Length: 79
Image (cartoon, rainbow, N blue to C red; front, top):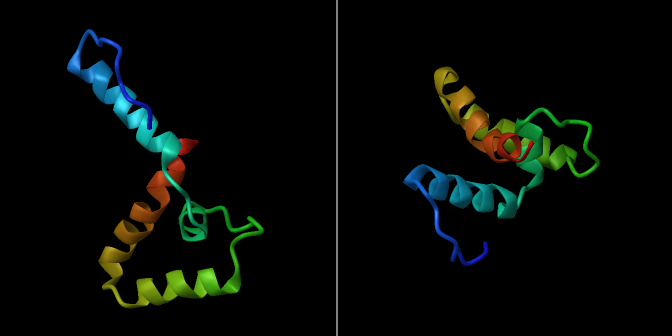
C-alpha cells in the first residue's frame, strides 16, 4: 500500500485506512473466487474445483465452512 503520512483523528480511522489498503491490494486467486460462490468465472478450472474439494475432504464436516469462509473473505472484503 501507500505510505500513510496524513493525520487521523482516531485510531479507528487509521485502522480503517490500513484495512482499506490491505483489501484493495490483496491478490485474489481462483480458489478465493470459487469459495465466494463465483463458480461462473472463466478462471475457475476443474483443477481449482478439485483442489478445493480435496482440501475440504481432509477436514471434519464441522470445520469445512471455516475453510471456505477463510478463502472467500478476501473476495467479500473487496465487494
